[in-house]
Image (tube, rainbow, N blue to C red; front, side, top):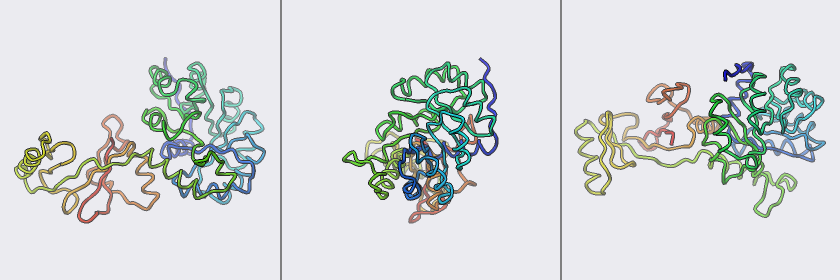
Length: 338
């Protein structure tokens, strides 16, 4: 089946790119618009500067207007949009994308004709293929868990390699990486960052600090940082081989020679010649280098885009490994895709 070419504007492409980089989109049902701004600031502080504000409540429109005016760094979407009138109100209030729970062809086309970015809800392959024919390739999958989860989407991806999904419904800290680990899932939506340990609604209790903490916890879970290996700068290939073999002899790690470095096990790398870092480097593994770059740059970290950047062979736009500019006590640090 030949798929339609997506008809997104450059601004819409940037919005979709941001959704993917953020990865987790908090889904908000808010009853009091006065709480919208402190809530948005809590999300931003926690590393999730995005929200799908649902039209399940009467306060949704005013909440969107308040966030758009006072927290402009937020990526704002409207959820549970099921009528043309709601779509008009959401766009006028300042939303950059609209989401419907189910697939309504007339509404989807209406938003497209208005120049809006629509991410319609779908739950069957037939609905997805109808959306493809409308020029869309990023769709909502809802309710995700009830409709077969990642396994179902992997089956749908067979004939549709270009489709991407934003999944909501049953997503939590326990399964977020099961979803985001599939490369055709661009993001997930959830509400678990608004629930206290005792089951309380943290928005109603205005516990902004706890929301920020849970957002940061969600980001850390998504990224999954861990030390992968330590690299030592050796002067020659011979010194690298000797050092790696000594580690293997002493500690029983398997020795693996390479083109530019030798490994002892998976945790010790001996470079054939000095690379970045006065003493060597530390590799930090992550579930997503792209999302890690986004999060760390938001924290003021600078990256070295000029040296030793590893890119995906099939898609050079995707970075698989990259160094931070800053050294840590003589060690360079680089991210690497797990």
